[in-house]
Amino acid sequence: MSMFEDIPVDVGIIYEGERIRRKDMQVELGGPSLKEKFELAKVKPMNEVEDGKIAIIGPDIKDMEEGKAYPLGILVEAAGSALEEALEGVVERRIHGYLNFIEGFMHLNQRYDIWIRLGKKAFQKGLNSFTYIGKVLYKLFKSELPIIEKVQITFITDPAKINELYSEALQIYEARDARARGLKDEEVDKFYGCVLCQSFAPSHVCVITPQRYSNCGAISWFDGRASAQIDPKGPVFAIERGELVDAEKGEFSGVNEAVKKRTLGDVEQVWLYTAFDHPHTSCGCFEAVAFYIPEVEGFGIVNRSFNGVAVNGLPFSTLADSTAGGRQIDGFHGISIEYMRSKKFLASDDGWNRVVWLPKEVKERVKEFIPADVVDKIATEEDAQNIEALKAFLKEKKHPVVTRWTETAEVEEVSPEEATAEEGAMIPVATAGTLPIMAGGFKIILKDAKIYAKKVIIRSMKDEKKS
Ligand code: SF4
Image (cartoon, rainbow, N blue to C red; front, side):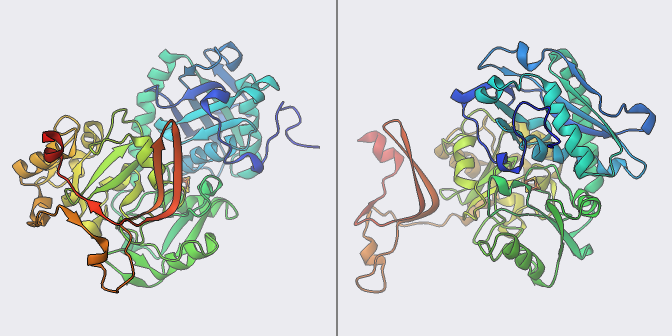
């Protein structure tokens, strides 16, 4: 007899990774169109938790209009004699995994960024109340994490109540992150790996070190340690750090071995502190993307909740598509906001001295961690909306990347054959792990593309405008 027989849809690991498109959705909960949403786990004293209680504050799913987006807060309150506040992050991250076991229910991201969709088919089968969602969470928490002795779950859809709890949730996330700051990678002999996102990105392994927070921004090194201890068969596991192969790039023999094993050989080498050559893989729920802008030899950063287009003319969704999937894409790097506060943040690429553009909101959040001599030299959407304006801004502010700009000869036409040392061989003019091309209403994706051209014409934008 299934433990989910009272749930109107199937529940199981096979539904992990299921995507629900807009046209197939009954309702959206949270997501990019709504500012305030959250999921939060709190550890409480035994007498303050009513085991199995599921509460709904505000309209239930059946009261929601088809096709619309609604705010949502999920509060999981747990108690157990061995359960400590330090485990809240671990409990909270399980919400993502467990909700994705539900047929026709998609959960993305974490904390203040949650994005959930319920499919029409699942709704028609009877999945029309948060009570069912709460029951699944309850049963999985109790069966998968025995350290939890009591748990109660509250779904909040009333905007006023969400508003009240949202700021409290932000303070709790910040306090959790602050606790994890200070420890250095060199001071520990174990890192932690997480494969929770392999359902969406099969060759992705997060390597969580004291100074490289997980991509989703939800698991610190301390959370990783706690998670591996309380649930050794779960998605988070210890990685023996092994030998330091390259201190500057952040290469460790134990990390290479663990990643190779957990990706079945797909990824063999990882450099933790760089976005080039062998960067840490990017799953799909990273909080932000660092993308290299060759024109200025620096990095732009765009985060998930930024609604505009980045300085290179692309929105977060397109940049995320070019980055995600568990691949190592040269110059495209999925990161968390907390990693931007680390001294190891892109350290091998010159760290903050290499960052040229980021949304104002993110800059404000990490401002105190940006070196004082560069903070005002990094542009936001208010300073530059395109590459030309960015170049002018960086030059005027004397951003450190400007010293990298060399006098390049004016090139009108370059023949790849001329640049080839070996006669008859052609070098690719562009390579990309995934190259999306938009044409005639279709999106064509070229995987592991290498593009060869007989002739490359480079024209400056100014010439283009004149002609
Ligand atoms: S982003 Fe990384 S740490 Fe976070 S859930 Fe996914 S695999 Fe785990």
